[in-house]
Amino acid sequence: MERIPILRMGRFLLVTIQVDMHDQLAMTLQDDLTQRIVRDRARGVLIDISSLDVVDSFIGRMISNIASMSRVLDAQTVVVGMQPAVAITLVELGLELPGVRTALNVEKGMALLQSAVD
Amino acid sequence: MSGTGTASGPRVEDERSLPLRSGEDVVRLRQAVRERAVATGFSLVDQTKIVTAASEIGRNTIQYGGGGEVRIAVIANGTRRGVRLEFRDSGPGIADVEQALKDGFTTGGGLGLGLSGARRLSDEFHIDSAPGRGTQVTLVRWKPF
Image 1 (cartoon, rainbow over the protein chains, first blue to last red):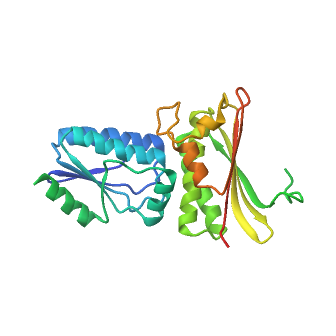
Image 2 (image 1 turned 120 degrees about the horizontal axis):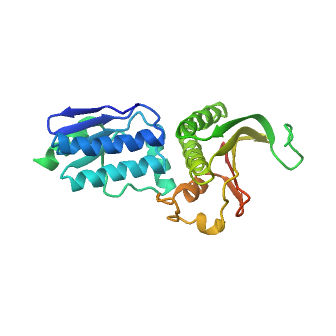
Image 3 (image 1 turned 60 degrees about the vertical axis):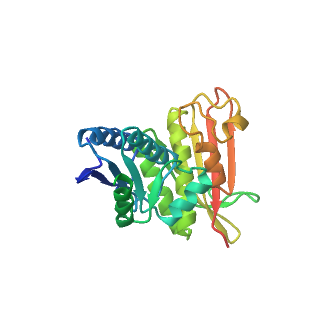
């Protein structure tokens, strides 16, 4: 079955979404990440969406869900690399990603996670 | 519909249909709409807006309409060019279109932003639906001058 790979870096999990995800693939990622947070005792999740040229309400909801679930499991989530055109479209769509931390790139996102769990 | 359009309607330059049955079809829809938006000379932001609107309505066609099809057209009105998307399903239809267009209204457990958000992302937006008659959603985004 098709899956988005989840990498572990110390206390953090790293996901780079590089394909145009159909809805089932997004749901699988959400489930996989939740299980990996528990199994790896991860304290943070970094999701790199710099390759995504569209984030619609379904993907937006997946991102919000991951942030909420990881919070309940005592982990922080940071979404990094959102393209400007995607950000403009998300706001017009009416999606504000409440409770989701964002950073401009992977480096800044990792720094944010470090400071959040130290 | 005539390929050359009528006196009042836009001229259709290029039109193709895609089936909408599965999540993979929505991915193909996004790619096809992106191609047409690029060919029409849309800016990156305008491409992103119409592709996102297409994704929302395409998902609705599958999730609520039980599947259907979409016609993707590059249209011209005088010197103005745009992309038109016509979604059609033969599902149960929408009893109250006004209510369905409100932010946050959902019968499917989602965020309720699909229809209302897609309307905000379009220059023209039209829903034709009634219980038992299926749903047809037409949206147009024009390339700004």
